[in-house]
Length: 238
Image (cartoon, rainbow, N blue to C red):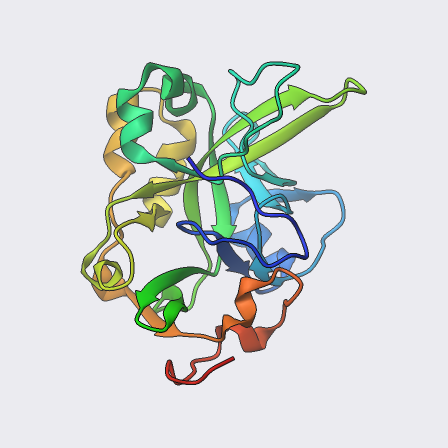
């Protein structure tokens, strides 16, 4: 399992520990046929765990709502310090009893324009940026949960589902987030059978994605601008 990062601090990286969401909210609403709930917060080039970003829950597929990245699982005890799961393995959802309720009842779409992954290099971990070749926004497959805080307020959290890598991603990391095609998005939200929705948790075709090394400035959530996704010479020190 993965722990969440603290906003504003440079933290240890995990699988899919950062992602981006660019473009205008009106276009995002049109693409996902969902209306934003609340005020738009603008695009982000460095979404980090514990931050809020738009998601679409299966219980309200007509709404885009800002919720917290880092799922607090239902088995967390009231007196226990929450351990936020930023990623959830697809095999855990399909095989472990504790996760079955999520693939059955608590699925969500997580809009994104790309994501970062860290590749082990001789000089240390080198961040890479990955996006669709079409440059279109897309949705990660996710799960969500709600819990009541000390004030009785319901807090919603989410986790990105990961699967094995496609050929391109295998050169960078041994896993990748589940990216859904447009047709798969609706099935993921509205499907009722785990055997049906589980078939969607597969690597995205490698011929449809592209990747390149980027600045290590992305390591800090305090940095958030378009320069973070610009291609750099991997031999350059930042």
